[in-house]
Length: 114
Ligand SMILES: [Zn+2]
Image (cartoon, rainbow, N blue to C red; front, side):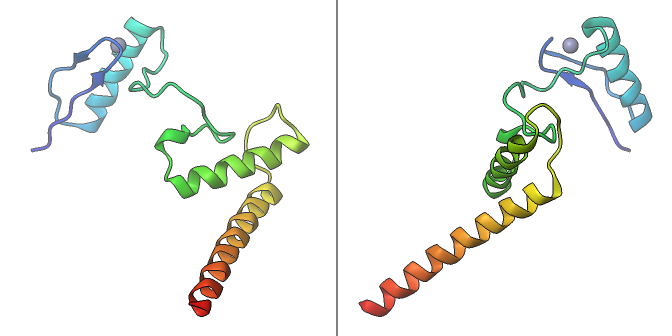
């Protein structure tokens, strides 16, 4: 038997145990609606998000670096919208690949000179 609970870190309350994901969703929805006006308590994840709505602190460092670069490139074209342009994502990947190749080249050269 599976057990589920809804935890609101804002209120610091935990729901009674339920056994179906649907009941858990109902529990969370009822809590959000009655206590937070329908807003989603975000498990203390309040901070900067990327243009795709992801919290940077939850991303893998490489993914976060890519998101920062893609955000910066996308902001050059339109700073007000959300989402990455395909060319910004590709450009960020190209920048990361170039940086990795450069570091690899430097390390290889340094190891050959020793
Ligand atoms: Zn709450």
